[in-house]
Length: 500
Image (tube, rainbow, N blue to C red):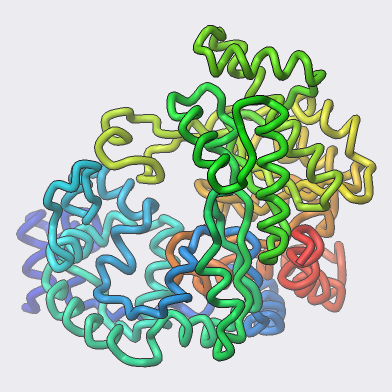
């Protein structure tokens, strides 16, 4: 009797653990071949699957346009080799670390470093923990991306497991040391046409400048203006953030008018370095449009420490409104990634900092929240906004009708918790009948994991091909139209929505 079957029957006397593939049988995949199915995410029904295959193949090798993500530009500026699979695929990916943490794996065992710099697990141990828990990713979007990265990019042919962890670690360390696996070479092999990063307004953009001035670099990496720290007047560190902005801009931020001038100054600096968009992650998309005397009064009160929480929130909404006003003048696309309760677990935030997997979606509302902005700028040809949400209930009720009227409004692709295949299908089902395909912004990968970019785009292309195939099979549109739409979603729409 083979080892796999024996292992399964140790878990359950009748061997049913092996038959069902339960979590207790994770050891059964010790030498299981890793081979992503060529028809993954395509329809199971044969007629639709054949249509989807043709549609997918028509866009499979198109260049990748990444108008919103979080890759560090220093990665490409320095072109430093990746050292090991843990620091590449595990530690920086909060999709991965948050799920392992939910199953009891402490974050320091996944490579995250305490704010005080306490010792953390070495990469090989991090990789072992990941491989031991590989089965926990079954059914998740992360599993789709990870399998594609491991197999298609890194050439892995067996599933991660406790038994294969060390073997795979050594294999991947050697693979990552090869010249073709450096960041710039991967950028070329991925077929990336443009990659947008997210950057602090006080950043000097030295890495973007180094790339632009490098005669050996032919790619396009552009910054995105993300001023959250300077707009949130409720944050304890807000005064310090204003000081940093003053140092970067050379403009005194001790007054409301000065803060506005400093933000305008830095937006222009970003535009000079290729930026076409701003990005905002406020809790709510609601904005205020105050008179300058009222805004100045609130600003002075918050700076003096005498403002109420409600007044600080009003000032924050007014500063977000100023971003919309500036976009209507300088043409930078206002990207709204609102509706998340950031840093939901304070102890984790205090120990490991932000963006470590404990941000949780909130219920969203857009019809009333966006009305003041759209009343002012919604038909202004200079103004454009890409609206994203973590609340599926507003897809058809609010967002599709808004994008179906206002020429300035584009619907951002499902992101974060909703960039999973079935959620992406639900998005298309919810918005298309009202807003069509061409009021959406295409796909955004929204990733810090550089090597996950092609896997994420491939997932989106497969999902959209499957959705369009179903419409062709139902005779809602013909296959030529479906092919044109799919190409537009990957080329025309991201370029148009983000002014690329």
